[in-house]
Image (cartoon, rainbow, N blue to C red; front, top):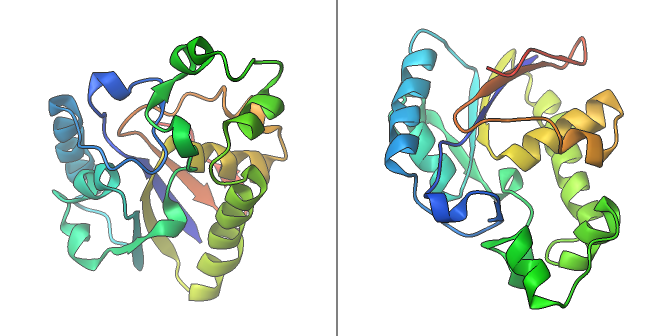
Length: 187
């Protein structure tokens, strides 16, 4: 199976480099243009199944595409919830003085929200158990950078810290070949 993964378009600048999690935020004007570009890129492609995060920024990215009408919107493709820190930047969280950064794992756990093990299991289950059970050859998934990075970490057996250094630009796409367990270059 080939899974085309699309990261949602750009959001308003005040949400850049923030832990946005489950906040339902709009696309920026540039993000709306990226959504049109994604639609153009997908215009001549056919997919057996189409899935999309149920959060607004992902839905709005898929909306201009002909594939929107067949999409299944699911919470399984949401970004990790960051609890009370959602919408805040690293610097803003540090400035509150409640959490110190010691290392990646400690930081992620300290932020709270959805437990990281639960988040990873959710992504693993969706991509490596649920989707293969659907007997599809081609799947389109519109989701979030964190979901894409965690999937890469799982498949390539790299640390989450390494995966979170991978640049996944707004509106970019990457193809995951489940048979070969490989990823294309992020475009």
